[in-house]
Image (tube, rainbow, N blue to C red; front, side):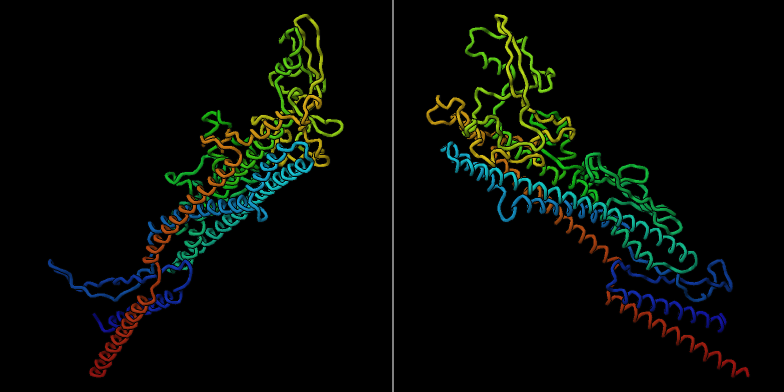
Length: 602
């Protein structure tokens, strides 16, 4: 090897040492930079020149060293594990936060527990039954009924408001995800451009990896890097970032009856099909957007969203995947179910209904002739014949009336804003002697069946449709507690009505949902509902804590590989400085040798 070649060897040592110093300094300057990955210089030997060779070995000398690459120290397995668990942590964090919000709404309402209003209503019923003719006690019942309904409606409205807030969070999250996709695509282009030569785009790669970490919290992602250095990203199994395009997520109305949105791809396919439920085994419990959609639900729920106790397994399964999995919708539905049960039970006690055939039997109870049941015909207010099997009429034989001068009948405590409790109709039938009878009756305007969905929501005794009847608020004496035949009752009140009213509070006939077998009375129902929310909240909180520990553990391992240690980097800095100094001295020595040789030859 010539002395001039030796100069080249020393220069390569200077260059590699200088790159090592620069890289180490870069690591130290980014010690606290979020998402930064420690960089490492990989040195390799340059090519060797062969002087001679034999059958044993070759006689070679090296031409120095060079930097093969400045690599990032990352562990692909840790990255994938971290991003999956970050998404799962975000999923359960949303669920936990939602439960806490619902607990706050249900636990306190303007500083007064909602359960107190239920108890106050029951106490006022007990007191009124003791003195049915007392205007003071009647007024107390009406006021407590109004307070109970108002507080329930306030809680329901706040649940709806929180639902709207979650809906807005979904809209905001979709914008954020699309922005992340745009940034990843832009970085892909920069990285490809920078690395088309000899330059490493490690800092841009760090920015891209940080974006992938952020994207992972929104949904279940997968990704791969192509040969040119682009990262291709899938979200929920569908392509999101391709080599040259971002398939932006979009939003559309979840259904025709609501302003709530679902998230779709440009093709119209749902990004997060929440109706499939979620499972840790299937990795479908990942990402905050899906969690927000599940927690929010897709409409304002009412009592009809909870299947009856005799529901089919298919109906229960559908409930569990939709309403049952949404903490907001399920709470709305169970609250509405409680209020519906209380209000309709009170109304039915004050204004009882009866089937058509039973009504006819009651009307002809004192008649010596029997009734030909096949001759019964009932018509509504428009004169249309209606199916008597599906009709209820006001039970004039058991009903009480008001204690006002007109003895006003058929006044319910809770009424629907747009639908009267009764409509006038007629019932016709024949006695066994052929006599035709026609009577005026009051047909109960029944609530629409759950199968009718929202087609006739105004017919239902739901929180959004109910008020305390204005006539009773204006004149408490119209509350129907008096016997129709005042002269036949020395006390002037109807004992059967009082009995019916008190019995409904003792009746353990109500379940929270079809998954619960235990039946409750009204007070127990509310306690069970609050207990159920607390249990769910505790489960989600435990999930969040466990995921937080797991995420931190994985991130600690990840930082062990990719994090920057100042002590370690200072050691490297000293090493590269020594290497630089050694190369410089080597060049000086060669220079002195060359100078000496030239002087001697001269």
